Length: 386
Image (cartoon, rainbow, N blue to C red; front, top):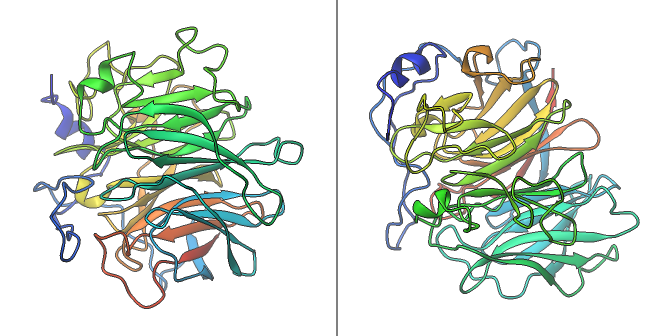
């Protein structure tokens, strides 16, 4: 079934309904399907945003400065052992190193990137074994597919890319692209359905999945189906991945018309798309632990810090904090009420990552063709937690 008749009441009890806004299309180009469609919604009853002049409470983020600016549609962000970061520019195909003092320098450009719509150079990842095997991993859209490459990094320049996985379905939208190494040392990858929802339920397709790979790109040992990289299925467009301190994997996902999702990922889980959007209450599907109206979210990057998940939102133009419960398998009833911060203060927010020094780095996404750029966009903001 597409939507449960009890969903609205369940979500209202979490205080996650919001008001409708519009997401501007790229200026002077054909209007693409938005990253999450908007619909009318019931006004949100709570989740007051935290602004600069409000009194800080536990877990309140505070912007302490701009790390760097004048980036072109930054997407992937990962940290090196030194504390410096690498950032991917979606449309230029460039990877830049950003030092802790904000100095940005180009270290390479991934060949073969075909950027248009939501296609381009997307996620980046660095393995925990970087000091002995200095590889940087990149997810990007080529001419006919999405693929993952790794490049040796000598501290100054990225080497020639080696393709470790190809054949991930690509489209004008819904390309997924987020990557993160897990506590088990394996590479977890979120993919999109490339606008073909049937792929999400097809176990032989790499579209609409979360994949689990070895650092060499092979299906990881212990996957649900031996020889398959698929870890979970039934996803529309996974945009954020983060592990918490208990080793649990969380994922953000664009909905279609009604509900964006935060999911706790289980081995072999089926998350319902395209047969379900939001809560389905069907035994064969895993329901999300939290949902939002698209105008309040269109969730992208996800990070874990200070006992909470931090979710960057594009169309919603805000940062959500979601307290993580201690229970091993929490349901929607176990989740605390999310709190919204920086509502429309910085525009569209794409990626958030926990830095080695305990701060959070948050990227804007106002030059991606859907935003309203201001001088200095796009930028990386540094956040500290009260």
